[in-house]
Amino acid sequence: MNHPQGLESDIVASACGPLATWKRSSRAPRFTTSCPPPPMPALASAAASLPYELWEAIITNVWRDTERGTVRGRRWHFYRAISLVCHQWRNIILRVRFKHVFFEDQWDFWIYNEMIGCYLSLYEGDLDSIDKYHQQMFSSCHLRVKVEGFADWKNIAPMEGAAASHLVASLISDLIPDAAAVDVAAEHLTPLLCRFLSSYHSVQRLRLSWQSPFEYLKDLPTCLSLAAPMRRCSITSLHIFQKPLELAPVLTSFRNVTHLHLTTPCFLGDLVVPLAHVQVLELDAPIRFFRATKKYARSIREWRIPSSLTSGLMQQSQRGKMRRGLIIVNTGTEEPEKWAEALDACMAHRIPLERRIIFFPSKK
Image (cartoon, rainbow, N blue to C red):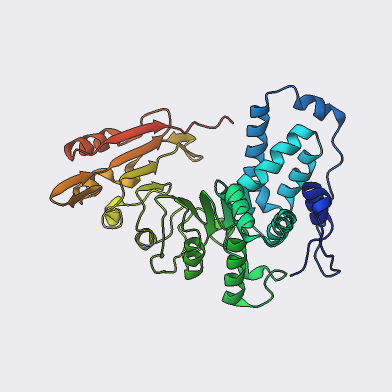
């Protein structure tokens, strides 16, 4: 495995200080983007003008910004710049980097591998101490992984095809052996993805983001490769952002899910059997702006809740007793179209229906 060079080494050095030791290879790729200039003294004085908790929330939100992953090294440029402003901001970013862990390309793996290696070198092979370190550091972390493209991590896994992808997946799970929640961006539900998720057998919250390989198709349902149900799956809360073409096989792979959050409308009547164990079904009905009419649309029509309830949605008989789940609909400030019909249908089937206002029109 080639080791980081250039900006990556500077980042590791700023995080580990005198503990950092690493090898340099002339073949290791470099960041071609320029480092940000040193911060001005005014930033340090501004850091003390707001409460610590507010700065922590701001820095955390910027670090988690998914757009930073689209430009190579942008998140780590931000990390390096923040760590140089003042002692307070440095403490915040040092904690945030392990609380929200990103693996979107091989650069992320290089830097995290060196950072964690700096701390593990202190234990000199003491396995008990290493296990305690992993538990304390990552048991509450939020892990985000972009599975598609593992085979392109040539500096990490020089082999080809599926072998490279499986090697990268195992290296990540070894480096970050535990997490409180996992976000996965993928194009397909493959055995590789299921195997990777199975290694985090203590994770209960999972967010799946289905991404099309083509930018102009990113808002459409993606393809699906069938995979067997995962073994040792303890995931109870599943959030699916952008659905694949066939949603039922995906839900079948997660047998223990009790809270399901869907963002892309679909006919819920097709999911009666996969949702047999789901107790809370959360649906998004955001405010959509249509340029043709220059109006905002607010509707839950596409979910087809009344007909789905007639098909038995969220109604399962267990030991002779009818178990009914809860349906939550996230909407805008105004009541969405077809809400009254959905409410009447839920009352007729004695299914609780709750509306939460979380979407607001953007100001342009």
